[in-house]
Amino acid sequence: MVIGTRDGRPSSHSHAGAPHQGDCCRWLCFTLGIEHPSVGWGTLMLRRLLPLVFVTLGLTAPMASVAAQPFTQGAAGSAISAANALSARIRSYHRWQGLTPPPASYCATMREGEAVLKQLSRLASRAILYRAPGVALSLQQAGDRLSDELDEEEEVNSQSGISYTLYPCPVPAPYPPRAPVLRILDAKAPACRRRADALRVSFEARRSLMQKCLRIPGT
Image (cartoon, rainbow, N blue to C red):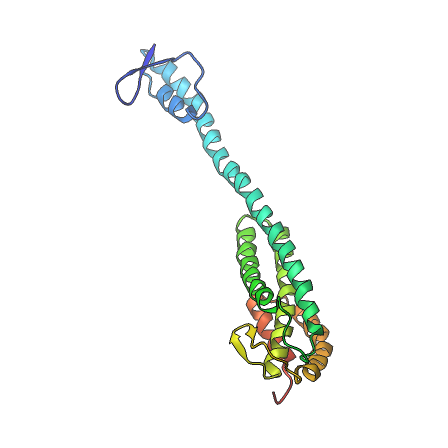
């Protein structure tokens, strides 16, 4: 039997041959539409083929989800690695006492930290959407570490009266008041982190909590 194509030209495929990959739905629809002298035979074929249609359609959603999942996990892994490296780098800035201008990499690192933190938040939302709670938790934890280091550094600068060219980039100059403020906030930070961990709040809520917790009364 010769099957006609959409533009009217005959196809080289016969009905008896196996359909090509990707043509299964068109083949099923064609089979269901065949006219046959025996109504009973047609009804029997319809009953046999309908479950196959439903199974074929039901498989498409899981396959799409599985295809998207590796991208989410791969992006999450890269973002977590970047966040951990930035957390360590920003933590090293807590040793800057303010007796000299800021380290050369300070401005670029602080900006990158803020950008990666936003990326972690977006990816955590996607991980929840794709039903990957373990990935979402890992992203949240990496974000918490990064935001805590950013908040401590930014609060030290703010309470030291440091001026900015463009936030978060300080004017390149010494800031002697930074040293005493740094000592106080460094001592407060662990307790503030424990409090934030216990509350299990969102990214934004944690940042607000940490900033308030690190605030020295009267500053």
